[in-house]
Amino acid sequence: METLHVDLGGRSYPIWIGPGLLRDSARWRALIRGRHVLVVSNSTVAPLYLDTLAQGLDGLRWSSFLLEDGEAHKTFANVGRVLEALGELGATRDACVIALGGGVVGDLAGFAAACWMRGIDFIQVPTTLLSMVDSSVGGKTGVNLPVGKNLAGAFHQPRAVVSDIAVLDTLPQREYRAGMAEIVKGAAIGDPAFFAWLEANADALAAREQAPLIEAIARKCAYKAGVVSRDETEQGERALLNLGHTFGHAIETAGHYRELLHGEAVAIGMVLAARLSARLGMSSDEDTGRLVALLQRLGLPTEPSKAHAPGRLLELMRLDKKNSAGTQRLILWRGIGKAEIVSNVPDDDVLGVLQ
Ligand code: NAD
Ligand code: GLY
Image 1 (cartoon, protein in one colour):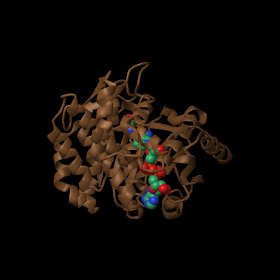
Image 2 (image 1 turned 135 degrees about the vertical axis):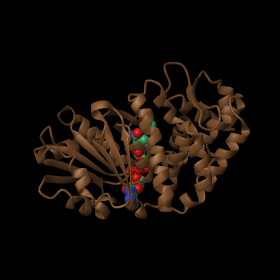
Image 3 (image 1 turned 120 degrees about the vertical axis):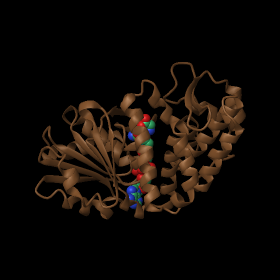
């Protein structure tokens, strides 16, 4: 098992990564301060893992709230329902929310925990690879609005992240690959040695071998934990974690969120960001080639669908949350492990890589 820490002074918390942690309740139960626990999960994950988790809640006053499965259910209305469930439980200020599921469950449950009595404890129990390496770490919580993804939310750090990698045995292959994209992203942004390690271990990771998988999760979490410790509320460096996202979100939106998983869109987005960086003379085609080759070995897509017109994608990119009024800000790179924020990228160059 690996243990890491997100260092935020009095709000610091552990990330545990290893097989069998759901059953190892002595470890995480000690963090539950009061008597009330609400487990938030969904209709796919709960039948698989809620009973195992619940064995560790014996003696506490607990109940569960299950979402329907899917991004479409990450809504304000469901936050309201979770708050009502906390009310029915009689949850006091020392109550704890446990998020058992992927990023959808974690983002929504964390936001509900941030709202109940202006903020109670929550524990992340991520069950997808993407949520283990990205969404469970760093305290970004929230829901989608009809006008856009993740537009309502709060920074609210968990008390712990409990990543039981045994639960990945039931994760569909496509979801596993999407999580791999977020691991590659961390290395591509800021850790060239990790990138080289991923190249050396890509086949073992694609085959889901346990030891390299734990190491990959831990290295990505360690990288993200460092960034979050230095810039919790995204005043600067944390924005780099969005490498590939501006392109990726545009591609996801153009496909009405049905064509691609988020991680797949990020994979394509990173390649487009790398190509744009090379076009602007910031990086080499060789580094783009290494990125493409690694993503492909991990089974990820690297080209956008030809069905989306470049002009439409550019229009969608302008709506990105990272833009300040009137300027297009993009995360680009100066080669593997060296991402940076670039403002005022000419539209012609963006269109050039979308074509
Ligand atoms: P998800 O939560 O929709 O899970 C993907 C699918 O896998 C779902 O169908 C889910 O029911 C299923 N599943 C989960 N665990 C399983 C398991 N162990 N076995 C079998 N099936 C399982 O998607 P995701 O990729 O985990 O997360 C995506 C969400 O995370 C998006 O809403 C995105 O906005 C958010 N996100 C947040 C952050 C953040 O910093 N807060 C970062 C990245 C992504
Ligand atoms: N997923 C980007 C962040 O946590 O900041």
